[in-house]
Amino acid sequence: MDLYHLFQDLEKNTDSEKAKKMSAYMRNQFLFLGVQATTRKKVSHPYFKEAKKTRMIDWKFISECWEKPYREAQYVAIDYLNTLKDLLVLEDSEKIKAMIVNKSWWDTVDGLHRVVGSLALNYPELNKTLILWSLDENMWLRRVAIDHQLLRKEKTNKELLEEIISHNFGQEEFFINKAIGWALRDYSKENPKWVRAFIEKYKENLSKLSIREGSKYI
Image (cartoon, rainbow, N blue to C red):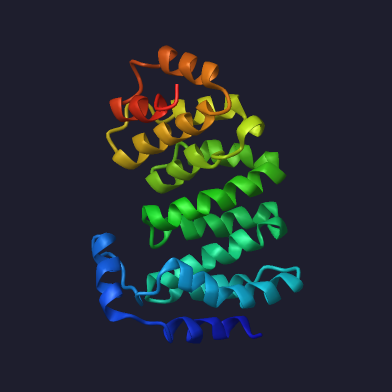
């Protein structure tokens, strides 16, 4: 199957009424076809199944996804990368960075932090880059740095988590404070003692939102 024919199959499922609602949910920042996640994944599944056999990531395809005017194409690119994440190499982090900072909103950014997390787990040297991201002016790079360890459980690098969060103390940005809360809440399932101590240690630096979210399970 030609991977690029996926766009044609996706566009066949256009639903203008759903598109309006989906766009409104994203504050009308992006155009949509109106293709919901279940349908999108059903359409893309056979294409990705064939793509896995090539044992390579087609970055030209990803670029085309990012250039498409409708948001579902960006979701397809993220689904594709998550499917082939084991093929990512350290140098791909710069390409992923470009995806994070272009057409940015929480929907694509939160899909990409899992890709980054997988890459960083395979290449620990990426941690230095993530520390730099945690200090970047671009809040979406900072959000990815904060949340890239979600679902790692016992593999969580506590020292890295503490350093990255500490770089983002005193923020008024909702998406950053929410990300901090999520990171702490997620790790509290694995290590509640550490998270309790962290919140107590930095309670004067953390936002109320971060503390509330981080304390949910402890």
